[in-house]
Each structure stands twice: as C-alpha cells, then as structure tokens.
Length: 114
Image (cartoon, rainbow, N blue to C red; front, side, top):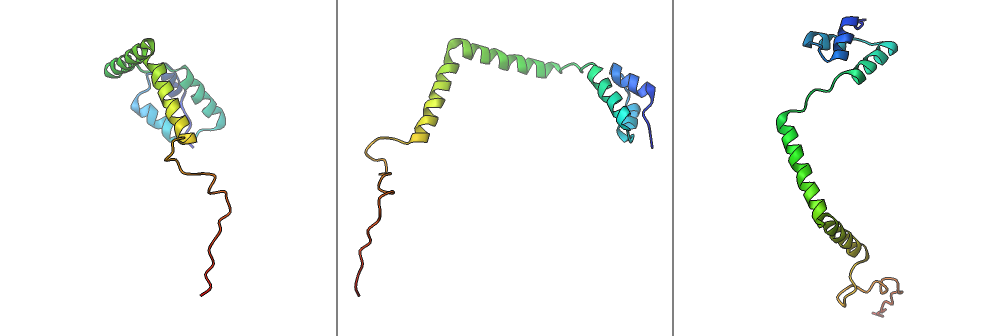
C-alpha cells in the first residue's frame, strides 16, 4: 500500500506540487485519515488564476446581462416568457379551440341492424 508523503501533502497545500507528486497522490491507496488530510490540503490550496481569455469573456457576459437588467428588458422578457407558458398551459379561448367538454360527454353510437 502506497501512502502519501508529508512533502507531497505540503506541496499540494501550497499549490506547488509537481507532476510526480500528483501521480503519487493519485495512485496511492489512501486510508481514511489520509483522505481527510488530502481534503484539508485541497481546501487550503490556492486556486489557480483564471486564464485571461476566460476572464474577459466572463466580464463581457456580465456587462451585457447588467445592461439588459438595468434597461428593463430582463423583466419584459421574463413577463413574455411567463405569458407564453401560461397560454400553453391553459390553451386558447378562441372559437377554433377544441370543445373539451365534448370529450367528457357520453358517446351515443348508432346501431345498425344488418
């Protein structure tokens, strides 16, 4: 059984673990206390920086959504979506709508005596 080393755990906690140390951690059969140590180390490890391209796209999306909400388009779009769902749920009330009560009436079948 391979156990984790203190140095690998410290490197994981600091965010400086190398590929070999990561391979050792991934291939180790960890005991419950070791799993707790790895979980704690991961919770303390610094997050890697977000790539600049992702950060720029995320910032653009947030800016557009913020403008949309401030302009009132968000509530208008939400109201229109709610109205569409309500209309689909209850159907229409025009003359072309099917007679739903007819489906509940007993059917009379003509009998033929042939």
